[in-house]
Length: 288
Ligand code: SAM
Image 1 (cartoon, rainbow, N blue to C red):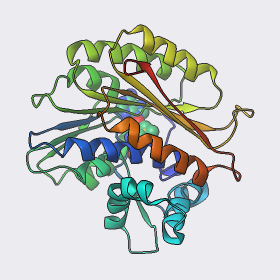
Image 2 (cartoon, rainbow, N blue to C red; image 1 turned 180 degrees about the vertical axis):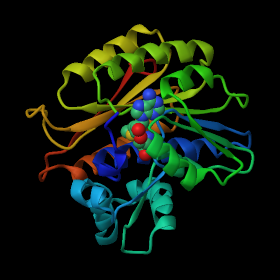
Image 3 (cartoon, rainbow, N blue to C red; image 1 turned 90 degrees about the vertical axis):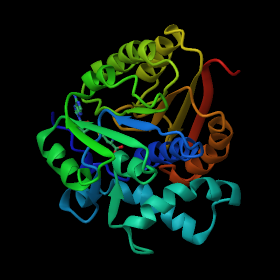
């Protein structure tokens, strides 16, 4: 395992993923019944953007850096700004106004939405990342950090006792096999827990692997699957990350309309060059 999320924390792909995560968590909080979040590839939990890794990567400045600057200078329409508020609240709680020094990973984002009755299982395999994850999140009785293979966790922890909740699957994609694991293990988990919400993240360099993943997910015969993609540039240069996508199984009924507002704004603000961003939002099955 060579992947270190510290180089990428807060980049455009994190922003897209965490904005959607916040909308799902916001929805889950609206009903009093307890929910559980299962984060299969949790990372370190919190990222210090002033470290040499974060500075060397510099990716956060074209992600959260740009979005926060836009929020301050107000080119974000009011409907999108209202939907972004829970995400900005999570970032704001960790940083002084006007200075982004800390960026939350997915388990810290999830923690911000937990009520006393809710739970989070955060799984991570890379030993140094596990140590950080424990340091950042393990002092909270609602949260269990576990050093386990995330793919094993995906099968082992569903269905959760609460029967309401979200499984986030966000592997490093160091190997192409992760694309295949994603669809294969979604099929197995969904057979065990058909009513859970699943959010599966994938990178987009070219269209090939992303389209093949969509095709395999369609074949699983799951009733409701929404696909959201956010691109910061055309896919002409396939050696770099041009965007990312989320396969959303059983999305909250509110999410499609919210993404119709949010995705054009993220595409406009986070494009690699001016007007170079784009998005896609469609149902792989159901709801069309
Ligand atoms: N979900 C995190 C977030 O949004 O902040 C980022 C996760 S990062 C893309 C992927 C993480 O998976 C890395 O921290 C990596 O160490 C970890 N990882 C790699 N292989 C794994 C495995 N088999 N099981 C669990 N975690 C793994």
